[in-house]
Length: 197
Image (cartoon, rainbow, N blue to C red; front, side, top):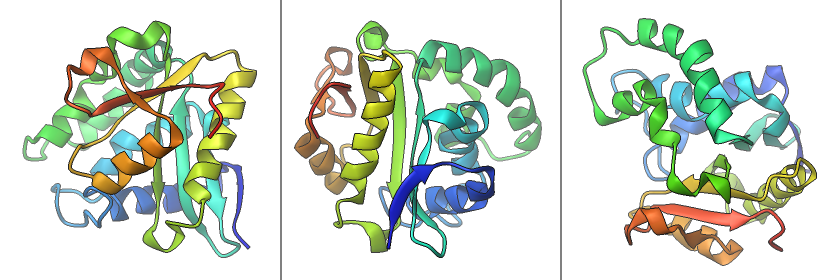
């Protein structure tokens, strides 16, 4: 029976694999970015390494098949990313062909948005296809929002590709709303941590 629990260091490889297997708009991104480790090194592993206390996983009993990772204070996370994560990341990928994804990994300031006062936290959530549609995404979000509320964090935001229609529909159903600085693109969404999801 699948259940949600806090991230453990032994989950790291599963989290990285889930990030890759869902990294192309929810589909498998294997072979797409010059290194199959790149996506996790940007969108998952910095969170579990730097801020594991706000990371949760879905444990199926056999493995981890879904996760939600979060930086409770984006500004502080950016500083830690720059000083603690970026040097090794830059070294690891110095010979990789330049790309938009690689640039995202090299530019932590991209995480700074105008609405950080109201939505200081940001998150990434991914579920393998076999877990989708079972309510685990909503349960992960509920777990994280409760954790953030307890920490006094008023809101959380996320970025989503408008072409990932399943994800957009999921977030809207939970109550995420477009943020003003997104200027109508529909790719930057936020929710208050006291929202009922």
